[in-house]
Amino acid sequence: MKKENKFFKDLQKAFNTGVSFMLPAVVVGGIFLAVALATGKATDAGMEITSPFMKNLNDLGAAGFAMMIPLLSGYIANSLAGKPALAPAMILGYIANNPIGEGQVKTGFLGAMIMGVAVGYFVRWCKTWKVPATIRTIMPILIVPVVTTFFLGMIYIYIIAVPIGAAMDWLVKVLGQMQGGSAIILGLIIGAMTAVDMGGPINKTATAFTLALMSEGIYAPNGAHRIAVAIPPLALAISTFIDRKKYTSEDKDLGISAFFMGLIGITEGAIPFAVKDIKRVLPAIIIGSAVGGALGMANGVEALVPHGGLIILPVVNGKLWYVLAMLIGTLVSVAILHFTKPNLDEPDNQKNKAEK
Image 1 (cartoon, one colour):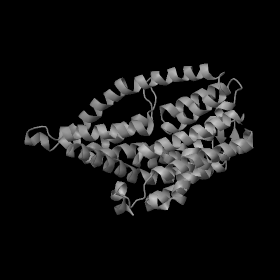
Image 2 (cartoon, one colour):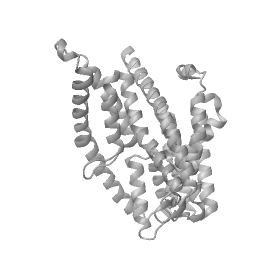
Image 3 (cartoon, one colour):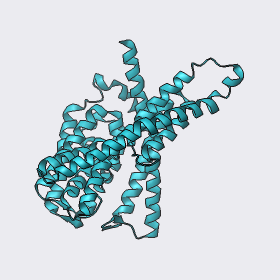
Image 4 (cartoon, one colour):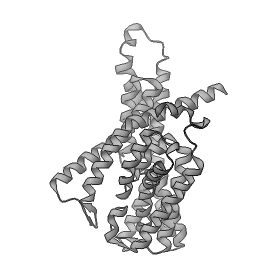
């Protein structure tokens, strides 16, 4: 029992460390993208930024977001196994967030978390190897990083990513068959898929499905999806504003940038909160996004561009229900967080007091 407790404490500490190092990239990326996209124009291809200066700002923001997932994975592993684990986990975190090879998908922050933990424990095992003194000096900078990256990289590419890609293709077909059925059920499913991995394969499957329907002139599922993308960051932001005893000062600061990310439909603004408290945050945002998606579908909301958040309101059919569905879904998530997240001074969160 003690070993099991130590394992979970190690994981919790590793996830918190990963989030701490990831936060600046999330904030920089989110704020720059928010400012740049706010000056853009909604088109059939998404938000189009015309100002050269704002394009550069958008690129800086995109770079911040590109660094976010590798930093998370790298510092999870670093917390578990030290410096030799840092580079392999960052490389594999990058791979998790950028599909390589044919037919593969990105697994997003969930895949990066898994790879960070896997690298951490694999490197711990490598450190127990009995090797000659001459080889031991090059173990941390050569042998351990190379072996770890190769072995776990091959496992990820050939054993983890390929089946996920096949599963997502199957999911698109299933959703396609549902399209003519109950609008509310389809909205619930699209909303839940949007929030469950916040930019990962399930979220991207919902995006691919709605884009395919848009090409056929069907815009309601895209409306549900674009309502749902804004709910996780908005819900966490509002939760940090009203339930201040449940969050660290770091979380409260992040809540401000998450709010702006929600307004422009960047779901990833909620990722740091989910990593730190996945068992409470994930159910809350999945349920809230599902409610928002269902309300959008039930009331015939149509988003005419492939982007989300309030920023696209001028190109939405059913503007009132677009806003109401987003608001209601957000408040549902906030309410669930209010009743499930403990205050920081409660025993369940004693470890967070030191962060304040």
